Amino acid sequence: MELTIKGKQVHFKFGVKFVRELDKNFVIEQNGVSFGMALAVKIIPELEMANIATLSNVLFLANRTETPKLSQGDIDDFIDECEDIEKLFDDVLKEITESNTGKLIKEKMKK
Image 1 (tube, rainbow, N blue to C red):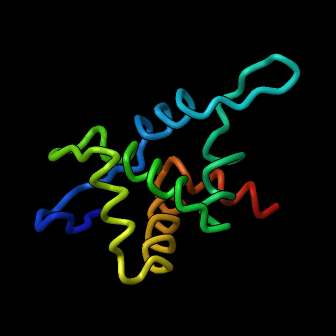
Image 2 (image 1 turned 30 degrees about the horizontal axis):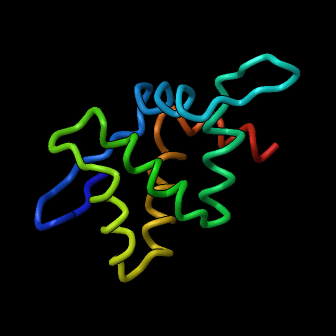
């Protein structure tokens, strides 16, 4: 996924490294056991409910493997100034659920 931020084309990748970062940053615990289910349990549902902080965190983590790297503040500013926030949510969800890392999760969530 590419977005123009501060006049530059910025890349975001929703791959395995992205999911690994999600699982490190958003630990899901049940009965004292940690699970690596952040994408299915937290991220996709929160994006579907238009949680703006989750959108910012997702874009930040999806940019960590790419160049140029943006700060969380740069992403927050971009979101604050975004003219079509609904489209941004839709585009991010589409990218995640069409990637190999999100495709199967979304299918299982439908069932």
